[in-house]
Image (cartoon, rainbow, N blue to C red; front, top):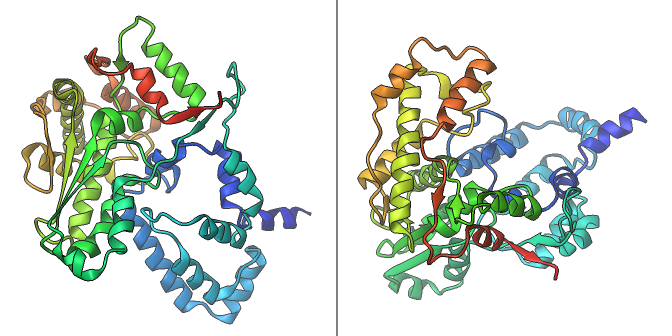
Length: 397
């Protein structure tokens, strides 16, 4: 009996595991890489996924009859080398927009077919909510994903005649949208004259992603707490991490072979440019200086695979941020990004500290979160922060 339960643990049902563990919500599409990769995994999520695929193909190449027999005892439904290669060949890219029949076929292949009715219903419950199950997530495809699908269907002669394309990423989208730019590389290689500008909205995308919670009811409660005094408060303390995910993926896109001048990423602050400048100056530039000092005082910290509190940031985040504010690469802001805080001040604050246990890590992390200004007011011309947050959900009523 126990042996059978052990087999079942590795038997398909990926979607079922997600649903049972977290529920099925927009939260799971924008969470940091820590929720889908081992702690300490660094760098571009897409580069890491490609490395995993490459490693699995090497494994498949070395599989023998003996290893197949051993794996079949542990992995129910194991189909050997050809099955592994078929799985890799049929896997979706993050920017793919599969048809319903493709999803249904994939679900049946991996024993997730029993979940389809539940996923189509999709209403989320919360045992602490006054009206459990009254909301469900809105799943949007990214503008980049839609553009890739469109351009892949355009005749080659017309594709080569296109000159410019602007993609407005003005909503939180599924599939880790910050890495979808990798899907543009092949298209830009086919037409090196094509200029693609990807505009990522801070007010309606990155701010929301940085404040994402596990379901709509919790999202709403958080918004109410911020709105208690009737002001349109927002909390940007996680914005640096969200920005770093976009900017490191942009650098990785260039490294993947994007032709020079073909692609740019613009962080857009409309319709609240002054607010974005204030947030960058008081929060983002401060966090950047903090991380620079952290690197100087604890040079091996960001390379460790066993640390917890800074596991979602890699060294390239600082490089990417400097490129963004200095406009020295493919990234820029359409508002004034402010000025870097004094790195030496943080170096002095770290003097005498050590990072040799979780308690020390917690103390450093608490220092990171100790912003002088932690709440900012949206302009009166914009919707309430709670209304912006709830645009990621639809109500049953």
